[in-house]
Image (cartoon, rainbow, N blue to C red; front, side, top):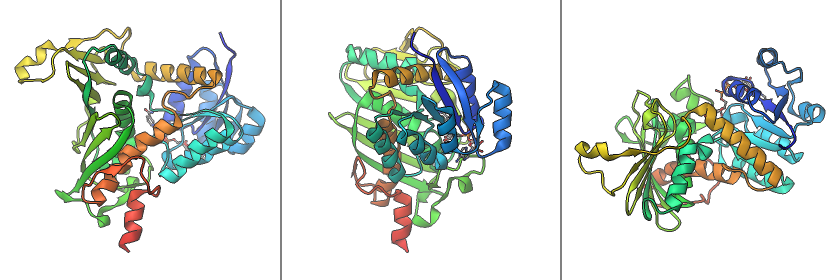
Length: 368
Ligand SMILES: NC(=O)c1ccc[n+]([C@@H]2O[C@H](COP(=O)([O-])OP(=O)(O)OC[C@H]3O[C@@H](n4cnc5c(N)ncnc54)[C@H](O)[C@@H]3O)[C@@H](O)[C@H]2O)c1
């Protein structure tokens, strides 16, 4: 058993408290400090989890608490500051998703990790979801032949603009686990039944006040297509359904000899199904999907535990963690690339994106 890791959690809101709960139940991790700009949030979590080290300033926290790992659980607009502050001191960071507000920030975060040698991971925790890991193993063992297409599937419950930053990078991250490195994207975004225009761009909070402060968004519905290195195709749909359905959330992998369906959360047990033939056929055929035993029951709590263990192992072994900063950045580029392509009439846009500005900000400034 390796040494106990000293953990500090920045941002003690909804997700920060979820991290605290997971950490409290996890062996090998000791939460030594909390940081939040709200003293109320600090006191609440401090009391609940018995943590005396409470700070409103990240630099003071890093000085005094000397953590081995910093968890950044602030809203997306506030990921960059604490992440870079910790990485520059050589402290490894598990940061919430999506990585940042734009790619300029994401580049700085990835570079800060590279320069110091500290590790950065983005908590797109389904990267290590047992169903995702098992699907990858089955693909590598040839269970469905060659991969032809990877289809991302959303929970929905939001307009596409908000879905992009709330759920989108979770889905594109799972798509990359199956498809590899994306090399192009093409996309279409609609608003009120027509192609979205520059005047339709708004802040995420304006589109939905109950969602998080995750920067500029546009659109109610969107389609994205991808090409992965090696010729695998990808597809994702954001259809703006009002209703959320966790059973829909995951990724389908269509192979030359069969298919896999991963469902990352939801009410279904397990989370991985295998179809030993290529085409679905008619709905009457659905009975021949077979549940795959992944060795445990699916669930967000378990997946976070896997994420923490994998992250700590990577820090100790001095290797890139699963869901690394570079992977988290590409998951976000796959989403932002839909905007860039839409703006260019749906043309295939190379990934990584050449222009690192937020595509919607660039669109606004060039339309003036
Ligand atoms: N991985 C997942 O499954 C998952 C699920 C839910 C949310 N999230 C992500 O978690 C993040 C946080 O979302 P949330 O709903 O918990 O937000 P929240 O608003 O509930 O909590 C954010 C907390 O950060 C504090 N804060 C703000 N600026 C700060 C700063 N500069 N330094 C320190 N503290 C600061 C706020 O006071 C607040 O307590 C978002 O990026 C969201 O996308 C991830």
